[in-house]
Image (cartoon, rainbow, N blue to C red):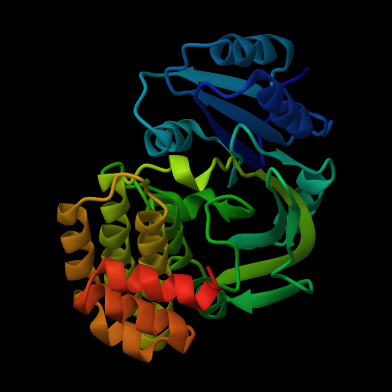
Length: 323
């Protein structure tokens, strides 16, 4: 296949991905016959057939570039892809997810109008259900400020994927490799803060495969505390440009705190040290919890956890859920 100058660079980090899922993901991308995109597969030190499959695709299709690197995590893999990208636009697609066959054509068409960022919808595939995330209900141009407001208040998909953004916005801008949780959103918000022209595309083009195990097998990790670090970075960056976004930032922060509380609640390796650290974090965000728009029940839950402790928080949750 003849090479060309790509309009879109698709970056897919690969680490020990199940072969069936990896093949499904790559095929869904290469199914589009256009020569106006490139696919960068970043093998993050896989020790299974994933690395071999990546090389096989590169041998068959000139649109595919493979980067082999030592294992360092998803952020390092995405950064390696960003450093090699040649396209005017960037898309991230996880190696166990897949896309609709028309998505690339639609994005190439929209790219002619030179937006800074394009948002679109996705479908989540759980083990027991399928859930459409149709946050965008009509095609429209919006300001970057409006897009950021919706992103912070949970009205857009909180991720790096299901989006296309101009590579020029990310010049010398990479994911924070020190953040082990929350790095996707922290990075994308930095990108969004550099944008001016944003387009919402009412098209469900991304399929997110959710790998969920039994809640009884979830282990609490110190990585969860990185969420608070990411929240702090987001707050500083957003308020520097939009100081009047205090309510929106509070909504965003409390959503992250609720995730941290849920992870601890579902874990089987609870320790007093982790509980005390969470209590300290929740107390530090007392003002955000009070002014955010989340339900009173959730606000009270976080405040009870932060002031009294986990056991009371957990018992009240059981009563509320009727368990």
